[in-house]
Image 1: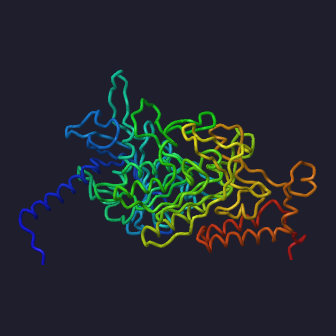
Image 2 (image 1 turned 90 degrees about the horizontal axis):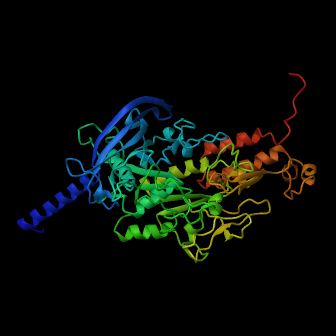
Image 3 (image 1 turned 60 degrees about the horizontal axis):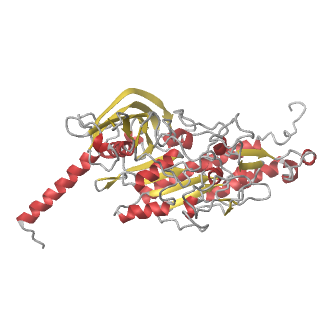
Length: 528
């Protein structure tokens, strides 16, 4: 048996005590308060409630956040912050599945319901708290919406610069999400004794972020915010349509908007901070592992329009060449063939109809796989990527930043109909009624993200009256039954491969069976 002398034992106890103090000081929530507590609905797991309020905390001025050392300090010599928080959770916590999903709001608008609960043909936009399909609640997730952004629900520390201008410490947004997630997963009470409403109910923590907030999560991870002491904050991350970008908020800004509000566009392709750091998830993961951290399990989802408008190919190749870098073992990446960055019903400022491909079914299936991967180490479906070609300018793709002189922008290869090849092929792409995921015009921030949908002609005669060379609906599908059967086969294939849930496949087949693209089935003249 190993015998330690008293001085060594005392040293180890002091060291463990220091580690514990460091951990709690880094993630201290001083106050959590809820000003609204309402019922949310009844789901397969039981009743849910929605609580809305504020979370308050303070940080050590030594944190690795630019400008925090200049910010005002409280009576404990620490730097205060506050942020809006929304919880949607089972009324009886034991009814939950043990997973906390922390959703990162986009420009102050929540996104979880739009990503996972959006119904077919009525896509939810960011900002909604509607129940929709109830998917998240049916599966027992607790959801936390934690605001972080300057001017969008977060009260960030500030200081006066040498010119007397107020500068906001924007990087505190990362610490807010870190501290809130860690508190909800592990704390019993806040510093004042108010109970954590999720106390004892959480065994794992997942993060979700779309677009700006997918970039938030990658930057969060890259810069060490996924650790509180020696404890990991997020066990899994679901990152949507973030392309090759990071989020430039590790700086002080003058407001009123966040430095992460904007992104590179066709009008301003050299916008700084987004494509200036590591471009691939492999590069980010390597830096995380080099610090001795265990990186979270990650699923990254890209749409077709992300390759044209957001340089998504650089997230596969890095800053030079056209060869994909290998994905780390903790990462899966899925391309949505024909998908648009955002799905909307109308885009009146754009010249073409917006993209209409509903990829929420994929989001739902992947979230369950991510949760199983984290909780049971169950292998998720393999990555599914679209083959790429060097962008030719037709349609135009956002050029690489001037600073990346060796970068090569690539876009998806397309079939004779103009639909992207490879990737996850949802039934609407496998059995198309038009071309999905084309580029819209003009090249404004809105139109470059909504993509386009160009329907096929209904009949051969209609097609021949136009310059459209794509076969018509009439030429593609012999009958309604032929079309519906092909949809059923495509949906079942995705279910078998774990990329769609059976309930979503049923909805898709039902819609196909009632499609107005075909003449209604004949009926008797009179009841019999």
